[in-house]
Length: 344
Image (cartoon, rainbow, N blue to C red; front, side, top):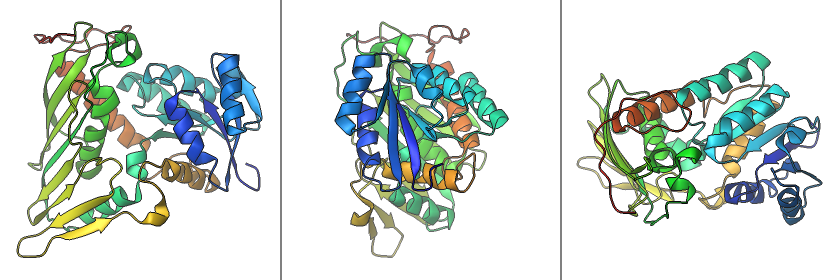
């Protein structure tokens, strides 16, 4: 790495890439040196917008750029395996958007490749890097609400999304679960680890993707988590963690919260709020800082977003899809359950 900062490459030029890059350029120890798209025109427009010196019209050129310390992969998740794999093969470190891949098989391939090559790899689960979420986890782990009994979390968008939209397209890994459900599932597993049992029901579209999904996750400890996601109804996007000695409620936008409230019997509720110095709650700078910290420390995995945790979440998402009968083109046959359809 350069002595004065970490040099980033951006792979893809869509909305999430722009949002991440906008935060990245404000960090004094980050330098965005290259961007790649499948279109030279798109790459050049993105480069001009953010003052990036090099623009590539194909992914392989970015992967081969020896001046890039780490690549942020911001493609649709159906392309995560190909894009991140290309960069890892070329010796680049990688921050890959969530959901990490379409399925556990692809995720294992990327993790194995990174470990074989000794390259840094992390899922861009910005929720795990959020300072207030990290404080919540520390309090739960420290026994602030006793033994965790239940977790509830939801994330839904009102839509409606037309059949041609990527959220309805099986070829792009469409559906509510991978785009939105990854947050409630990741939140539950942040606090409880991987569940021992998974049950789920869903409403599927005519294209065969889930329009809304509800899942019940259970642990051998007796803990339960109820998670829900939807692309046909805007939900409150709240979360709640109940323990034997109290409860923590996270209001809307639990994956980038402004505050949470600790309730304990016989005590006045305590409110914990985000530090204004940490920047806007929608900021991606926290995950970028964690990547740069790990790279400077010579780490190939982040303890905040560990790869084994990413694999565990992907395994749960696969199990949910198995229960609701959603599969994507090119995947092995999954057992199908009776389909409930709703009008487009």
